[in-house]
Image (cartoon, rainbow, N blue to C red; front, side, top):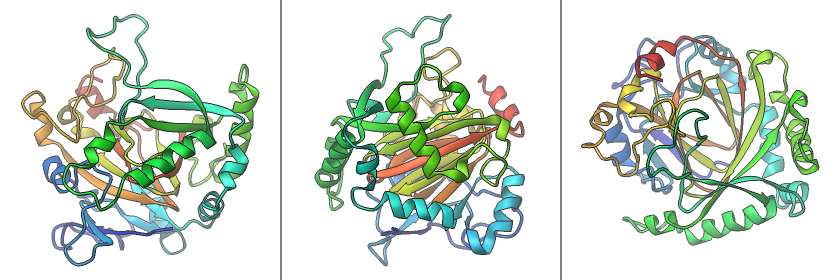
Length: 361
């Protein structure tokens, strides 16, 4: 399922560890981060086409700071990093790979989800997506309008739109030609595995979708496991299927997060919670609080002067990869092609809470 390979931009001498052969415990400088300017200048987030490296057109250089652990060989290391509340990627879990195999069979998901039932889907007039929810007691900012619209759509209809974007968006495009595709409508399909206690009032289609998610992903069930640290903090399973170019703006979440990709590729740009001030967030009370106000693809350094000081790294998740994100870690997500992702949250830790409080969140 991995048609492309990604290697670190940096030399082994630049950081104290090898991202593909990390030590048993996180080094003091883990994870390595670089200037946000260097990262976005190397690969503009609005462009889902990876920049080729000098030596091989299918091997791409990125500013990777996260360790990648193999399930069979490095599982004990992954446990140590999770206990240390450090982000990492776990690869080749057999249970995850079984889902990858099923979901990438022709017609499998279409047969399961089809055209009959409709599910909540986010619609945007362009490729940018940002969570929003008006504050109950504070007025909406002047001139503000919702960045997306929630609609109901069948999986079959979403898939048709996603496949059109795959064919219209030629990977051989160069320069700024991809920008014209970004200005076309995009859809972000959602499927949720809902907790039984929250099922009241849920319609038949959503129940069927929820049953499908729970049946397909037993390793995300509400019980103690490597993926579920605190079962009492389990908040259901959230699946989001992305079409090429879809971008979820930088934000943090208030709980630990396990994120699995079952098909396609997603680029994550990550930042430590201590970068909160530099990321220039909307303030509490704004409908998109917790999110950056900066357009990563075209940042305005004069309007947002702190942003040029931000330190970030990046990782491309491919089918079979699971990313662990501790509480409050910032993430910016770009769909590089048609992809399937599901995540589960389980409890909150407070190691990084002070950084978030210090920037007014």
